Image 1 (cartoon, protein in one colour):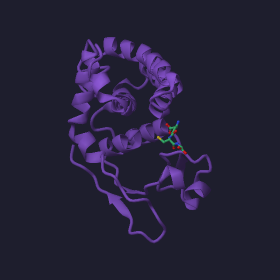
Image 2: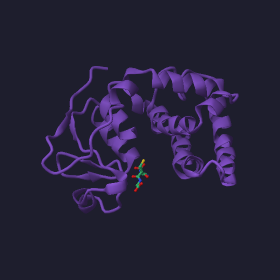
Image 3: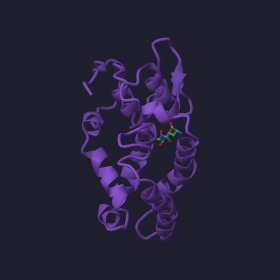
Length: 200
Ligand SMILES: N[C@@H](CCC(=O)N[C@@H](CS)C(=O)NCC(=O)O)C(=O)O
């Protein structure tokens, strides 16, 4: 979702190939043996295999919403790395543990430490760094959405009014609604799915 959001904002037309994680196409694994998505191949043939690198590449090309205007901020960088190296582990543990697994709640409690902090950081502005979204919002929101979706009822009862407002603004935005299509798994011979430029 990070990559889709950045390509949307950068208004970069591209071909989308849906990879099924349970059944990764050999062509995909040949191109990117580490086997994680997203992966982007540029027109020049360069391979970009990390979602944050795809975001930065896309927005370095075109950034009409000035999403990168805070990207050199140490606050932004440390926040993203907490999400990628720490929160994501707790999110996956919470999301993929069975309901009767006591570790599920342990993972959720760990994730809550970050969410308590996030709620405080969102008290000042509508978005994390300003009154409009920046790359750090778009890099973090997909994971907060996943966390909320594990148990929406529990999530909406937590004392996080700023996170609720922030997540809802994102979920109701044109950007989110425009990129949230589900595509059929890519196969050789399928007609290419061309993603056209959206007007922002
Ligand atoms: N650090 C990578 C992580 C990417 C990642 O873990 N993606 C997941 C899907 S959201 C994946 O491809 N997992 C591989 C699998 O489940 O086999 C990035 O942000 O690009």
